[in-house]
Amino acid sequence: MKKSLGFWLKILIAVVIGVICYFIASFNKAPIEIKDTDAKYMSRLVEAPTDGSLPTEHSATDVIAYSLWKATNSNYRLETTGETKAAIATQKINIKRVIKDKKATVETVSAGLITVAGQKLYADNKVYMRGASKISGNNVTWSNDAPEVITYNEMIRRVGWLPFQANGYIISDDTILNKEELKVEKIENDLYKVSFDLNCAPDYAPFWYRREIVYDTNSTM
Image 1: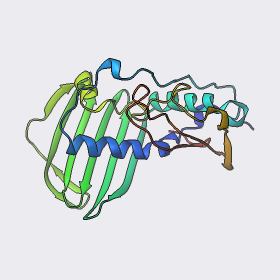
Image 2: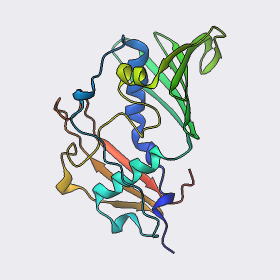
Image 3: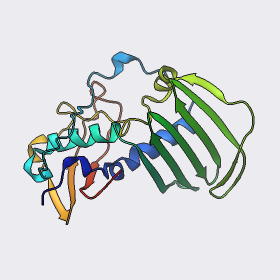
Image 4: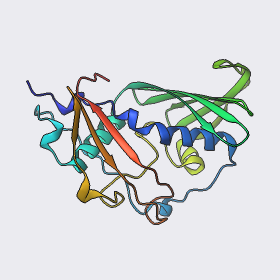
């Protein structure tokens, strides 16, 4: 039996790098101003069809658009672990992101030469932010002080995106470099993959990385 595209959603495996970069930047850099005109293009999101068709029956660019739409319009929990290595130290990263009913909770711990942690609640156009009073490994005691409160627009000006989005990258026909080479690959059973490169030119986006999206047709996120 064919699977509905509505069940694909392990797309978030694909956004680990973007998520890690986002939180390292938010902890270790001063706020930056991102004007609306900085991003010339927008990610392409298309509602996923429910006709039971398989990913291989659609173009690769459509598969990407379906998955971005699904990630933006779904409830899910994502936990990311990883590390960044420098000449003098290694930072270990642990990120938890929970999206439910148009609200988001994000917890981040970066441990190493510098250890920091932060918690953000996104709800009703407000972002409530607080730090930690104690950190032991990945165990965090959150501060009871009054949180900093800013609007969604202010958060976008600081870091460029909101956690309801699949990631902070602009992904569309305009920003994908290797459109002619794209293909939907079946890895095993109900798992599919599309790999692509993004344009790094400032007119397209202030970021670039080799991207890989993995889809699991059994996912019920």
